[in-house]
View 1 (cartoon, one colour):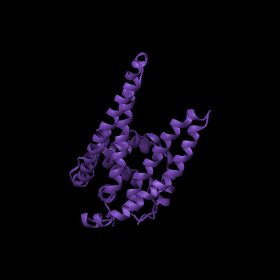
View 2: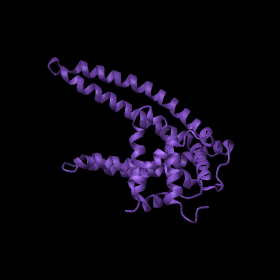
View 3: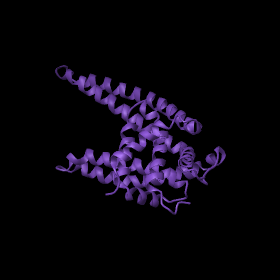
View 4: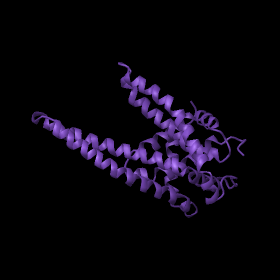
Length: 247
């Protein structure tokens, strides 16, 4: 397999370091505000749900198993926090995908010094929201059969030990595809092209996606994961994946 997972992971951190640059700041603010708002909304609901589950669990435990609440409660809170992070990130991706394309466009123009004939402004980005949602749905439809396969493996005795590794590898692969799709879509390239490009530098794509998948599940840090991943994926596209035929 071609590529380098360490270099791939580095694209995310390079993207993170570029978020405060003046020329990109305006294109970072909207996805960031949307992520903060969605995280607070989902987080409030998750807080009430987990608090109820913790209380119900503690009430259901007999006195002689009361010590288990010290183990169960932190696990429930951790699960709630991770779920909130992933769910809010997914919803924001669906809602603001055209604005991520705009951010990717500006990054590519800054890095390469050449114009990208993509959305060119807020108005076209708003009009492109239905198309962006359709493209996000396309990724979900690609993900579902793979997730079902890993789920089946998770239920087979003897293979269950490999399930956590497979889930994380699938998450890393999907995160790579998810964000590399933005710069490639700006060049009118299909989702099949995205898969082929990431497969051509699989280790770099997996290294990048693994960091994004990990950070997306960390509360507060996940608030900046989307714009940082968009910028990082654009750097990956420009430096490793960009075909000579890019329009």
